[in-house]
Length: 158
Image 1: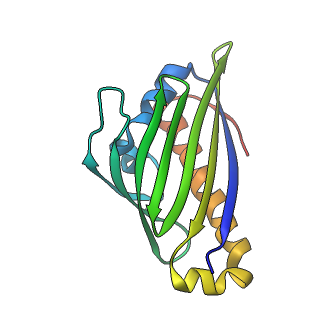
Image 2: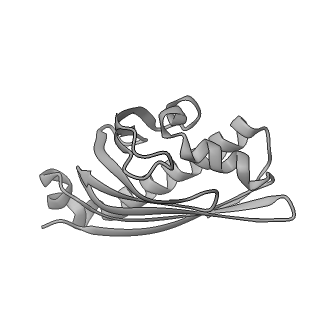
């Protein structure tokens, strides 16, 4: 049986919102700055705003396996909101929300997914906390990577 995971991650960056938005919106560039993102393949570009964009993402974290899933963007409200649906080895949805105040940007990422790999589902009663720790490592790596990319300070990650 699939296990559901609900994550809320916050990055606080000493940067204006627009450069943070650009880095997050440009998924194809993630492997260049986000440790853990092995590959992003754009399957369909979507419309002029990015709605309908369809990509295949390959992730490799601290655990010795790749996680591959596809994402289709369903809502874009530049420069504050991106929502996408995931399917493949993970199914569910994700939402990026960006807020800026006095030159500091808060990035909130909600990730509500279920695993579909039989071995992950079978071991989730035992390894669920390890999978959650792994997600946190991936997201911290993203926060550190985007701060390096933008040349700004990472004020907090949670």
